[in-house]
Image (cartoon, rainbow, N blue to C red; front, side):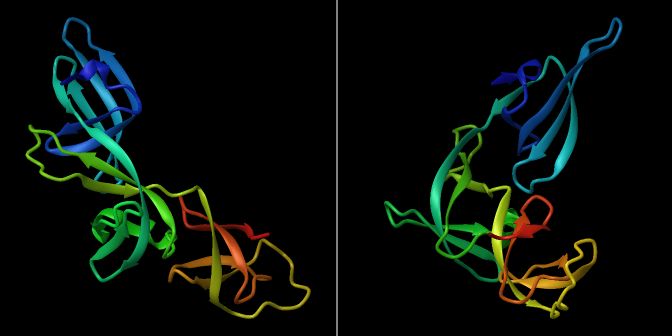
Length: 195
């Protein structure tokens, strides 16, 4: 168990049956009353940023997190399939957990997957996948876009483009179908033409 006053940035804990990771910690003391711990957290199941406040005398179960390198195989309507390259064990991760992050992982690519390891108190039997770690920027191929006009190199005008992963984003007018571009995985925006 971990005390509320020990929930510093980077620690993971369970509150109301859900795993959270602390981003920012603040201890607020109120006159004669007890202290309150205010946290900015990330819900490890869905990636949502939330603010939590707890009494300073509460304690929480610490989350055991681990990372495994897994190769992305494919996805269907509800599930993404990964494989451990050493044991050839297949791991199924619901797309609802991965969200849009799965669009930035290419078939055959090895990615680090964050797992919530079970403890006796949690009632879990097997480790549960929480997220795929993405690099801040990835190179993607433009599958479809309007043709660029020769000499049109202004970068402050944008047009719609569809990438190989199915996502759409705005790119400068000079980008053509088949070109590779760098995309920011945090906001899904064009960064630059790939070199």
